[in-house]
Image (cartoon, rainbow, N blue to C red):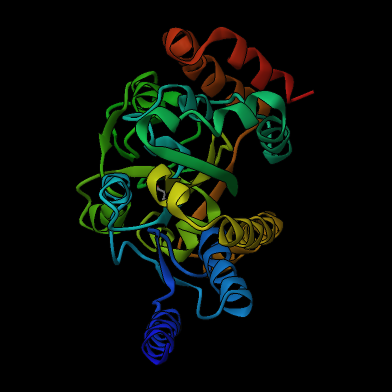
Length: 327
Ligand code: SIN
């Protein structure tokens, strides 16, 4: 009897010690932008909420500025278990699904309200599952904003872009978009853009106000055309393996914290775009150009045929649904 009691006590002590020493679940969150951006702030908020609510059980480590992985490598790393969360731009998933290419179609969404309406609607919500077969889980959309065109020369009409080299994200739609105006698109990682612009290896790029400001592109690009020609938003993703193995109670709490952090990021995105645009204007390093309706119409006319080019891959119905979100 004494032996049995001793054995039970010893087992209880061992289990207790194991529970006490069980390391928290680690969530490495890797991204490529600066901290003072909607994505940077969303990641910080997520960490804060998890620290507050799940201390000792889950630990979030945020790696901004491509410190851990560039966006072109992060999804492979996620599938290998080297990173648990990321929020690549929607333009960086084409290796895994063609349907998310919808977000790259030029002049499809008239503004961020339309983007949000589409993302929150049935088609947008269904797209969150587009990566399932590839072992990735879409956890939510995150806003950055509408893209602008920056360049070494003023871009007012499509012919101004002719022959110029533009850095693009890894997207065939974006490639076709620049080819439609006879420009030369080059797929390059975000971390290389500043140097490519500074050394004049390329003439321009497209990005949001917050990325142009936080990565100082405006300091090496004398002109920015406020074209609002496309959207740059994100999909927060994790691997199906990590997500499935996460304890059910923890999963609920982690998802809740993530949803709140995404809401926070989305709530500051529009304000950030407006204030970063103003800071660029105030810096006088770059001239912000607006387009007349007639000039804008020329860009639309030149770029819109790209929709047809990708209709089979994306789906005509999906494009229609996205268009309808403008109303
Ligand atoms: C990002 O906002 O995550 C990067 C966008 C880019 O690659 O241009």
